[in-house]
Amino acid sequence: MLRLFSRQKNQILSLSATRHLFSTTAAASSNLYSKYSFVPPPSLKPLNPSSTHSPPKKQPKPRYRPPSSLDRTGEKPLQSKLPFDFRFSYTESSPDVRPIGLREPKYSPFGPGKLDRVWTGVCAPVVDPKVGSPGDEKTVEEKRRVARDRIQGEPLTNAERKALVERCQRHKTKRQVNLGRDGLTHNMLNDIHNNWKHSEAVRIKCMGVPTVDMKNVCTQLEDKTSGKIIHRHGGLLVLYRGRNYHPKKRPVIPLMLWKPHEPVYPRLIKTTTDGLSIEETKEMRKRGLAVPALTKLAKNGYYGSLVPMVRDAFLSEELVRIDCKGLQKSDYKKIGCKLRDLVPCILVTFDKEQIVVWRGQNYKPSEDGFFLTEREPFDHSSNDPDDHEVENQDGEEITGNNDYFSGDSD
Image 1 (cartoon, one colour):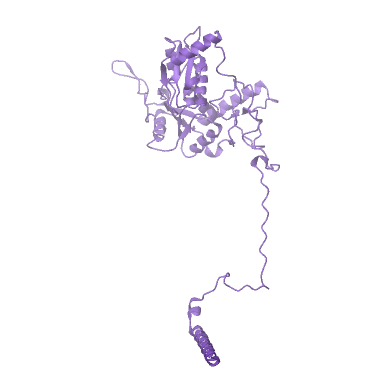
Image 2 (tube, rainbow, N blue to C red):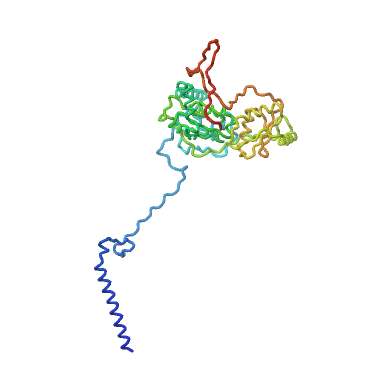
């Protein structure tokens, strides 16, 4: 038994020695290492405890600080020479209407210490109310008018105007600035000047609440940008930058970093309507909601003909109802506020997504109101030598064709 065990042990030792000799011979005779120059990665190399290095320590992250608390000690506030008060919206807010309160502290939406003007909670006036005087405001208005006349230069001829309008049509360019429910905002001025870098005129599409008073929209656009509207079809405008406009000399327009909260204004709907008791007011609200709707307003539509429609309806009806289903509550409240000032009329209720207005007891149709038509001609015979009045053989005057309208409708 011992002899058998020793014999098996000798066989195992001889077999292992043979395998080791064969492996060393094959490794010595193999040229794979020299041919491919294989270098093992660091993870496969044996670690030498004497040459180990400690991993670098991570730097601690700096403490988070919100943008409003960044230190601006070494920076100067931005100075803008624009001669008008900075507001969030120039068409949806009026300097004549004073709020009765603020919803937040007077944090400047331009950022802390970034503008050299004081934020009053509603606007950033160009003249400091604590230092300035009423005469300074007149000086600023005169300065704004002179700057606009200098930038505009000579008026465009009819041929130049038609060429610019044709260049701004939808089938020619996709550049467009959209004017929505917030109206002409302050940051939109920067968008208009950016478009004026590439073309002399820019197309502006007006939608929603601001289109109730298109005259105000056109006035504010020309006043705040120093441009000139050369074409209008419904809510589609073409704004020209001027002959003497230089993009490199454009004004500095600081951007608002967030939308400020709207201030608190007096209530639009009062408990008792003018000259009526509480019971009579409730009865009028019920009758107003039962009146057939004058029109139904579409969301983000064009409402330029709404005021003339209400004025015409007041000639035969005492109460007028406007269906506003699908619109946001803030939108039809702004529309009702505009109707109250432009028609004029008395707001009765906003219940059930409806606007109900009353013409009042002693209603008189407005005669001095002026509202823009759907299309407005901008051609002038005095600007084009080709469109002047000539006489035919019979001595009758013939006027050039000034009713040119270009572009497609909305």
